[in-house]
Image 1: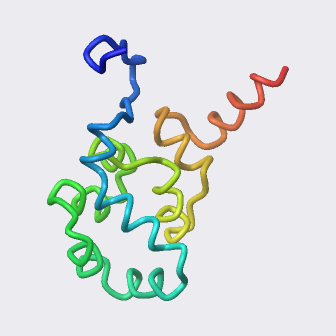
Image 2 (image 1 turned 60 degrees about the horizontal axis):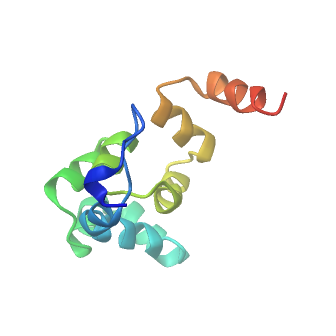
Length: 116
């Protein structure tokens, strides 16, 4: 199926090949956080670390603002963004809540409702 034929799910950002290319630098930076030394370098100077990975202005702004939806719109993949979120003390449920516009408690309740 061609990308132009795909029907997006309302309220979501489709992560396809174009978005993967768009978000490559952001996702590469987040992948680097597998290394504790890189996490510490980021904590010392976030802006310099973002420049090191050549993030776009939009990506740098989203990181600085802790804007998960903005990072996703800039090509961020939630699985890589989870590494960045961990530095900020957030977990995957925090990211899911941000993506859905729900509170963390409401997001958890929604997840639990699927298992009933």
